[in-house]
Image 1: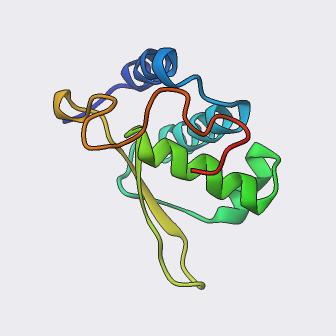
Image 2: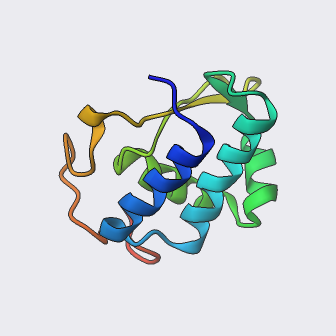
Length: 116
């Protein structure tokens, strides 16, 4: 399924109603979205952690926690790579990937302070 830039933005805000993403989680999502747009929607996206950490302006622990929450709430998919290669990101939006499907998360779980 091909998604438009606007569909991905709207999907984020639809899911945010249920999960109340932190500022870091939102900033990370939109950083990945911006890179995807600049790379003309090549998937999967290979993005170094250091680049995203600089864009989000957070430490590595906060970055990893934010990325995991976006994965757990089905906004993105991520596959790690070796220490010399960047991990790969791709979008996870379709009618079958609605919030709370295939996850044990409850709304607002882990927001800002609690580990996932």
